[in-house]
Length: 162
Image (cartoon, rainbow, N blue to C red):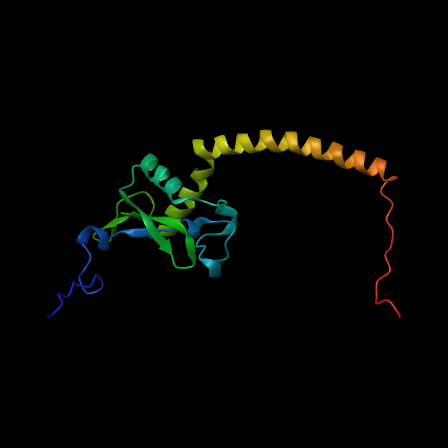
């Protein structure tokens, strides 16, 4: 009995629309990554912990033709899902105001901090941490007062002699 061979995706050419797109992974604009870990733009222009869904939101805002691939992963980021295919050039001619992929990455990274989702989570974090910071400062000062003022004692190390 012979098994039917499925055509390999590597041997079949990709559709024309996919061949001409640029791929953007969130790691390309992540401030916490080094160049060897996949970052593509200068750190001062990057954003912390970008998500593929945020890149999609920016592409919609800029009216850039894109395709979101939520199941794809960057080889060096196996636990972060999502990438975005962007149509930057058509017939090797830039169709947008950004001439290169790096220009587009810098522009996307500059817009991500202004997203509503980022602003909302930033406000929640600041309100919860300000309350927690004041209570932890109070707890620390009362603990220091109870212990006698936070004097430091040196502990002698080494082995015990028998």
